Amino acid sequence: MDLILKYLPYLGWGAMALSLLSSFSRTMIPLRSFAASSNIVSIIAAAAAGYWPNALQNAIQLPMNVFRLRQMRKLIADMKPGDEGEVDANWLMPFAHVSEHRKGAVIFRKGDAADRLYYIATGTVSFPEIGVEIQQGSLFGEFAFFTKEGERTQTAVCAEDCALLSIGEYELKQLYYQNPEFGWYLIRLIVQRLQDNVERNAKRARSPF
Image 1 (cartoon, rainbow, N blue to C red):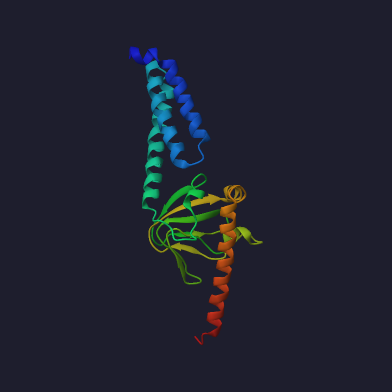
Image 2 (image 1 turned 135 degrees about the horizontal axis):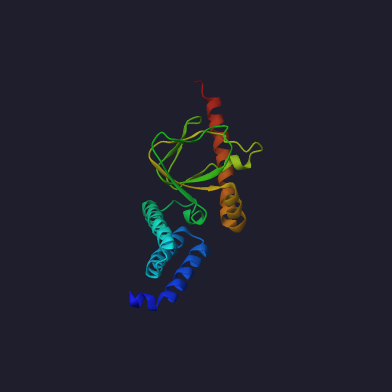
């Protein structure tokens, strides 16, 4: 304990530096790593100094940071390498919210306001109105952001258990302007889906049933 008290000021500076590094981190894994490290150092320093409110605060934050760090590492480990033309999930990581959904869960319904763009980390998502399914590594929900009404054009349902990354409209605009490669990918994706819709409608028009 005497040794800890001797180096207490350095522990304080170290905790502050780690906390600042987490604030400036652009991706989730370094952010959570620095935050958890800051929690550990802060707990030691606060307990040695007898400042229990700060020790308690960091003791509460530490399990959450460790849980989120493990969750993100597992999510990345579960991702299979995408085919050529698929979106790079690393583009989304600095902005992404991670969520898990059971099979049959409705992600959004046709006519809902567009609030998030989604990426399938694991699982399959179906669009029952048009009978289409998309797999792991696919982006969806982008179309509604570019419509006049800003509403979902289809209902999205989990065809199996899914883990999704999602970002809001503000983060989507940031990513679009900061990363030209992503913006170009998004344009190509929308055009491709428009073409798919035209071909699907043409096929239905030709079918007698």
